[in-house]
Picture 1 (cartoon, rainbow, N blue to C red):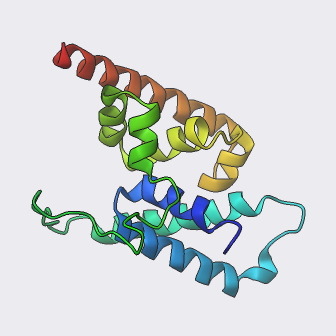
Picture 2 (tube, rainbow, N blue to C red; picture 1 turned 90 degrees about the horizontal axis):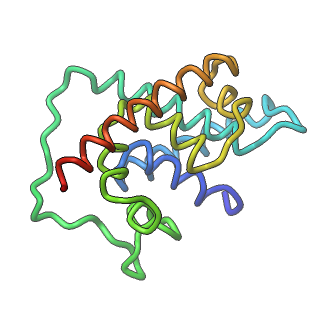
Amino acid sequence: MERYGKATYNFAYRLTRNESDASDLTQEAFVRVFRAWRSFKPGTSFLSWIYRIVTNLHRDELRRRKGRYQEEIPEANEPQHYGSGRPLAVQPIEEYIDGYLSEPVSKALSELTPEQREIVLLADVDDFSYQEIGEVIGCSVGTVRSRLHRAREQLRKLVNRHMKSSS
C-alpha cells in the first residue's frame, strides 16, 4: 500500500474524476489484492496487476450505475479536503492536467468515453507499453493499438473543436 497507493489512487482518480469514488476504488482494489495475493505471478508487474483490478472495478461500477439518474453536485460545493488542505494524492490530477495540458486538451479528455480516456491515460500519461496496457484492460496488443489509435483520433477532433471555440 505504501509503495503503490498513491499511483493507484491517481489512476483511479483519472478514471472517475471524483475523490470519494477514487478512494473507494483504491480501497477495494487493495482489499482484492490482499484476498487474491496467492494468484499474483512473481516476475510480473504488480502495478499492471493492480491497475487491472482498478479498471475492472471501475467498469463494474459503470455497468451497475448505467440507467440510474445521477444527480449533479451543485457548483457551490467545494471538493473535500484532507488534513493539510490537499487531497489524498500527492499531486492531484487537476494540478497535473492544468500544469501540463492545455485547457482544450483537458476538456477533450473529459469528453472521451471512459474506455477511451482509460487507454489514453495509460499510454500517454502513465507511459505504459502496449503489452502492459493489454494486461491492464485484458486484450491483445493489436487491440490496444487500434483502440488507442481511435481514442487519440477522437481526442484530436475534440481538441481541435475546443481550440476553435476558444478563439
